[in-house]
Image (cartoon, rainbow, N blue to C red; front, side):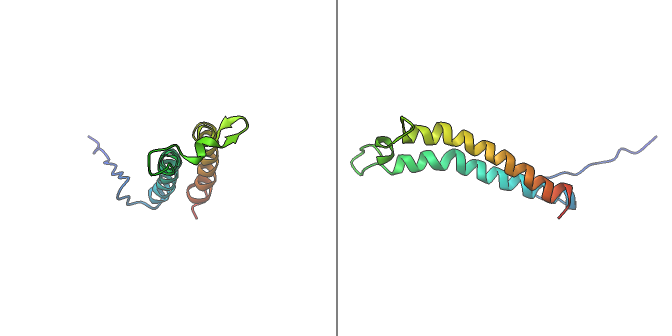
Length: 99
């Protein structure tokens, strides 16, 4: 009877070099994703006046839309596409070529 091979894979404590490179790429992308998703709405929220008035970003217009709407709706979509391209370039650099 063959002995089963145990595979030990951990995102937080990788042991093999290729898995360390993959985790490095994934952690960079997750950090950038978090910043793109939550940082812009938080900035818009906190740029309001001390009396609870709207942010100056709500009064600005960009392509006919309120700027805060454009930042969150269109800007995040563009950011996610750029994040995908960045992921591919990091994957090529660190995982495929093994730098």
